[in-house]
Image: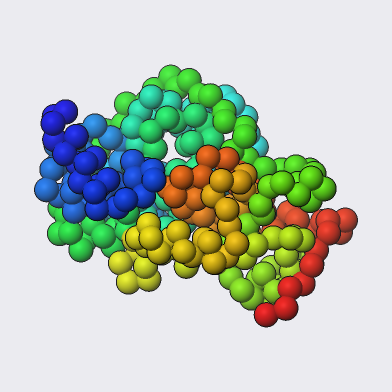
Length: 285
């Protein structure tokens, strides 16, 4: 078992060359070494009907939409202890998450990391890559043994509106707008006020993903992409979008590429753009 897992990790490191390749799991390697999958709690973050139609063997369904709203609306430690533990997870449980679009799995990944789960990973390419690797498909729903989970909130992963306002004063932390160009320029109306947070660097989260395979682009391409957008991986960064999901995907990408101080402004534009007192700029296309 340990040898198989070591082979899997080495194969990922050699093929990915990402500074933190251990944040990703490759479906093709799992298909070759199915024993390695038994170490992880596998979470399917797709819609319930998609999960029921067929999923990765051993995967359990996580209610992405509920998690998304609950994290936005309340951070009750006790409620989240039950929610996370209800999936058979605590902070020492290795977890891998997948979906069919990238942002749902990334949001769940980020929420688990916020609550202190030490080893949480994304399946590179998600369901698309699993099918391409000819992975087995199951309709069986595994029995879940709930845990009396202990959580350890990592508050430095989350940014608030007040913290963003302070960042605009101190000018040491990079602010990344990972929405579409139309949203960034205020053309797509998503709030009472539209545009961008002043000084924000723009990089659409989709640019980090291969549109055909749904996999993260190679490390060399990501490095150039981030540099071209003016992003310094050695500086603190805050990502934002509309409601935290796309921002989670970019936060994952930055950490994958070696960034050590990354926050997600989870309430993002849904809060900032609807507050009459927050500063807004309307960049030119």
